Image (tube, rainbow, N blue to C red; front, side, top):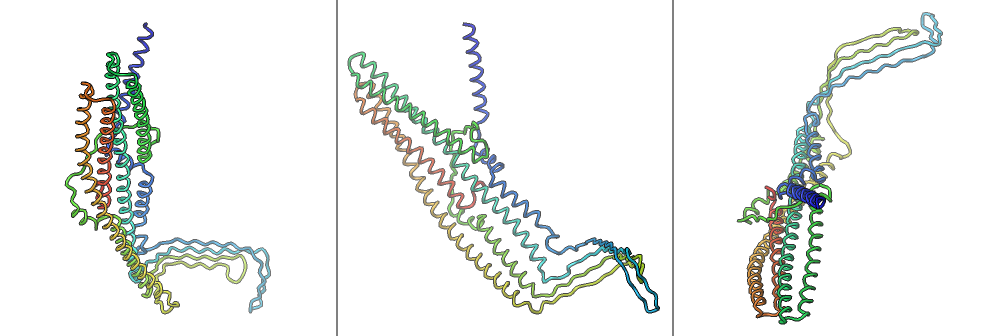
Length: 436
């Protein structure tokens, strides 16, 4: 007896521990989104792209800053010499050595190159901004995916509640049928039928448990967690009220996809400027300090050493290079026109997508209202049929039909609410404001 009590205590403690863990692992939608934004691989890649663009966006990468280099060359040579001078002096020697040392500190500063430095500076800034827009777009896509996966778990859990409620009705119906059979007012067939309904509905509940687990696996993967991690969600779907399609239409011009394409146009215009600048002269200043030392163990000159500062400039004016610059300029202009056409195409597609999603949202909203009303009517119908069945005023076929109608109607209501939330997500995503 003591052993049984001890086992029951252990089981009770274990049950409390499991319950505590389950509660601790319940996450909100916002927590799920934030977790995904931190650990999702696509988001991490986009963040690395921003970091790369930021590292590239500095003055030294534009050619505007001077370049300073230290060059040291030291050559050692072993040679033979056979030398006859005009004064009759003759030198014949093998195994002679020489050493030539040259060291230079040189600074080169590009003063003018057709304003290509300014163009490169703008391009680097555009690349950084575009990478940030790509991250924003990626975050919106992740937010949409996480939200759909999150409410899918809620949908599956609500379906399970409907199935469990229907199972409870069937179990109560079986109790009534058994009591009637004891009184001789019901036959064994009704008992078998009620029992079969219960077994079928229990299997449906078990199958729904599997659907819930699979939905949780999907959410775990999107959040970057292990597929087998135990999680739970808050069983509540909130809807955004007073969505204005006019505001969405106005905000569409700020969509990250369009902003990125506008950056691409400016990027190509900078390439046009750079292509045009290749026709202009280039002017460089240079200055430095040099040290040269040559010494030899044989020959006319045994030691030569010089050192000192120097300063100079370089001026280059391109005159003709086979029309390469003209072709590059035409290519850059064509690419700019292509990007402008791409912007117009994407903007048209986004406008069309926004209108389609708005119509889908309106339809989903009306369907959700209708299904909500139908579900209320079905619940009243089921309650009425239960009372009639308890009073013996209806048969088992009629109560089963009432259960079927109620179960189907509740399922459609749940699905309509899910569809409405998905339509809302897609609408805000199309308007470029999801997650803001």
